[in-house]
Length: 295
Ligand code: HEC
Picture 1 (cartoon, rainbow, N blue to C red):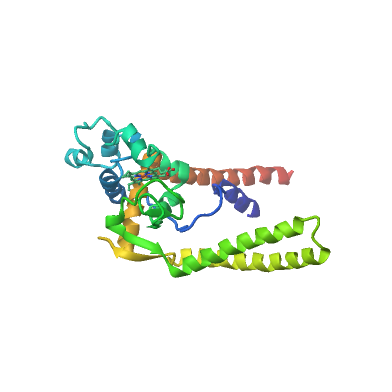
Picture 2: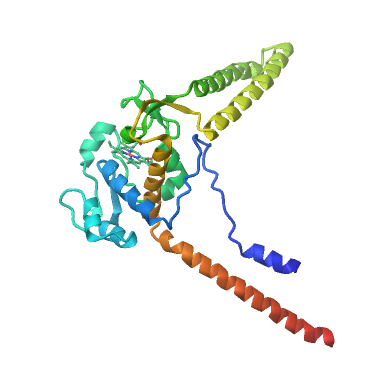
């Protein structure tokens, strides 16, 4: 029996965690459901209305979307910008040179962005714009600092600012880090007295702990949704906005990986098949060994 369990565990797919860069906050899960076509359809609509002005999806054709998402011809034609036809790819409305002039960068193609960045990253990114006067568009982003994209969904979400708690925590982290740098210089200074070095090391240990606590507090604020406070209300409540963004990410996750709509079903059938095979193999093994043991 133990062997059987081991074998089953072996068959279960191992989830690999991609450990890319440092963690950014908010760090919530998008929790998209590839089986929920209404959600992906709503995402497609939001995408066309709010994103396609600047971004393209050169690997995605309207006709493919219509087919995959069960859209009627009328629904599909609502998605098409300007003169486009059903067989066209989803090109952006804005011309490349103008975009570079306005934003300093050409907004990249979003066909695969959910695969490159990850669904959760995109989900958090679109919820992390906050007011910042020092930026050209008046907003910054905690997931993508100094981003060149304006907060295009602000009429839905409203405008948010960093909460006082977040500002305080960030301040503790920043001052702690710069203080530690000064102290480390003392530690590395060949001419510093042993006493001064010991004192600096002691202080570094204390500050390290303080910074660590502040970082935990930062993560806690993120988990509890307390990083930002709404300064100007939008058309949606925060919950409605999160749902809308989830739909939008579901659409991008689908364009990044259209097979996903079907792969879940294929995967389940394959697992079921393997399980049946496993049971058969187990009994076959028992049958063989019965004969061998008798001898
Ligand atoms: C007004 C033009 C504009 C609109 C509209 C717009 N974006 Fe952007 N977007 C940009 C620019 C410019 C960048 C590049 C930012 C940078 O590199 O600093 C960008 C970057 C991004 C990125 C980061 C890509 C990466 O991996 O670096 C994502 C994701 C994104 N946009 C998604 C969206 C979505 C989703 C929408 C619709 C809700 C949208 N954008 C609407 C201009 C726009």
